[in-house]
Image (cartoon, rainbow, N blue to C red; front, top):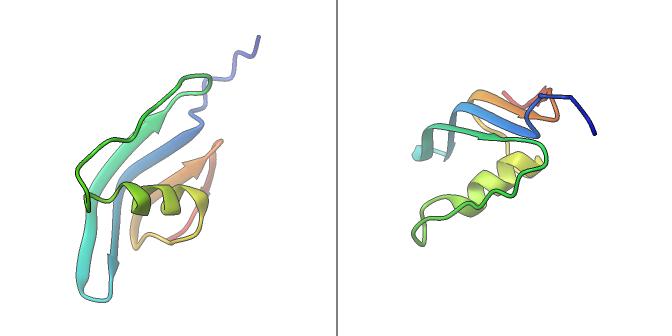
Length: 74
């Protein structure tokens, strides 16, 4: 069994938008290793955008985005 306590995914104070339209502002999320985590919300609430940021398909403008301890983006 692994003793690594680094979160699988960690988002801190993320900001993302398209042109002048702010979509996400101040989003923070921590997904621990080995845990099942659900992302729920209303239609148009930014769930797919968060997943695109985690997957590297979109790049945030501010904040910190880490996957297995490695930071990327802005």
